Image (cartoon, rainbow, N blue to C red; front, side, top):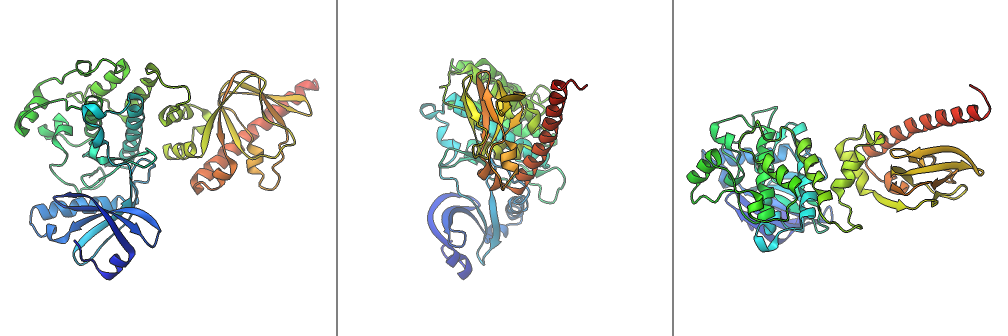
Amino acid sequence: MDSKNDTFGHRFEMKQLLGRGSSGEVHLAFDTYAQRDVAIKMNRLSLFDDPVAGNRNRKMWLNETRLAGKLQHPFIVQIFEAGSTDEFNYIVMEYMAGGSLKQFTVPDKLLPINRLIDILYKVCNALDFATKMGVLHRDIKPANILLGADGDVKISDFGAAFSIESDLTQVDMVGTLPFVAPEHFRKALPSQQNDIYAVGVMAYQLLTGRYPFTAKSPEDLIYQKLNEEVMSLEGWRSDIPQALRFAVHRAMHPDRELRYTNWRAFFDDLVAALPQIAIPEDSRFDSTRFNSMRKFSFFADFSDNELWETLDISRTLTMGTGKTIIEEGKIGNNLFIITSGEVVVSKNGKEINRMKAGDCFGEIGYLDEVRHLRSSSVTATTALELIEVEGKSLRRASDGLQSRFSKALLTLLVKQMRNTDQMLFSMMGIE
């Protein structure tokens, strides 16, 4: 694969071979046009000549390219483009510098349990999104879960994906055997429960450094999957929270009638395990923040993608009673959503409103692009926890998120004006 056409060779500076498989190679390269590091997957055209394997390889390559624009999610590796030279097809993808989860599947390199739960939560969330888009991954395993340099997590390799809406690129006999659900061997139609099973097996391996079954041959492994029970997680280690053990064992239950039937139930059980783990007070995981946010009415119409994007441009604050968050007459355009506690809103020293968990304030400073002077003060009347969204970051966010915030804020503004009018009328003795 050393020779490339002139356009490809001038654009991409090859830096390092990242991996090689039966169907091609993955290289780290520098995109001189976009000025960024990328990962390039190359498939030799000669692989498509074989009447059997060639058709399979062609379908897997088409799967990834056709899904490129469809699966836009913060925890799915982004595909920038795909193309061909005289010698190979290639896919240009987001480069994840932290390697894959496979490095954490040995007993002496296991991840902290709280970190693993956060990763599993994000993987489940991304696969829930893919399922809603009509796509099943079908090859979930640690090697296909990549980490960024900052520790972020993303799913890769949708080459074996099953499209619920089309059979044009369906690939038969896919998956990595330890992660394949038992019903696959009974010729059951693919469902999201196949991916749920695979995530369960992956979680088991990442928690113990071992597979659930230890057969010596593929035939024995299939037999064990169909007829035997796995070793309980408690048999390998005693520090796994009961809620997490329950979630993992249910996810990989051999009877899919007893397995999770949807992703939300699975990742809700995962995050429920976090309070059972001793976590430093200054460690706040995205999964718990996300789970908290989607319970509030303010975010009711936000998609999961929009909630994750909100997390990226926000931070969590804690404040004591009597602390002033916004001061009348001061400049500011940040937004605040109360997650616990209460505040009082005052103008010219007089109380005009009270707010509690789920309410938002500071919206005028964001909506009014010209005048950023605060029109009132907001003070904590109890211990308080807030989500702070920086106004300038929100203005740089996606058009979809800005539109969603604007709609939510305008709805909230109308509600607050109605409440203020009612309070003023009451003070004036008007019914």
